[in-house]
Length: 261
Image 1 (cartoon, rainbow, N blue to C red):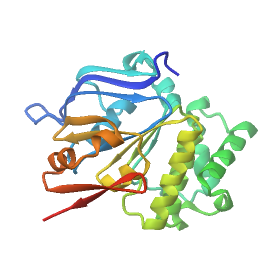
Image 2 (image 1 turned 180 degrees about the vertical axis):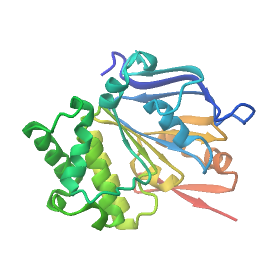
Image 3 (image 1 turned 120 degrees about the vertical axis):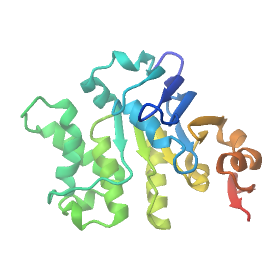
């Protein structure tokens, strides 16, 4: 944990994919607090996934600075970063007929040397990750045979097996039915309560409202508003983010977002 409770800090971070292109991320400044769920919310093309890829080191930082757990992002080795941060991508294709347990074991790769086989402790951690994700009963099932929601939970388990302090999720409820989306969000709440720092991207404001402690609103790569969900989720802020009239109403202690023609 960082000394001041800030897990991630972005300072004037900018990125463009090709020279001459508009900025995909435009001078973003933001903080993510340790042990919270932060939703990066915005329409498609707003820069949400780009931010995650910058944090993972999958894209090179072109301008600004990023800090993770009180340390400059540039000071981490690739191996250190892969131990610190786990990713649940929006859609991960598994081409081999791996079992769910074998798939979760892939998360132990950052902790193993080249060509080193998983040890009993690695298998134990992978099984614990399956239990945390609520899919221990599926351990022997081939991943390609799983439903969409089960595959997403298996991907969460694979990321958890890394033992990351920070978990990033790219559109974790996208393409899931209501029941599976609720399962994913329930797992995220349990992980937050256990001390994990979670950052998720979504274009669905109601998914963010259901789970996030903090929200960062993005449009065209720029932060329009950021802070506690209760403060940021206003009709004015969300209408500006999505470019359409939006109404926010309270329901059971959480905001519910309605769009209007």
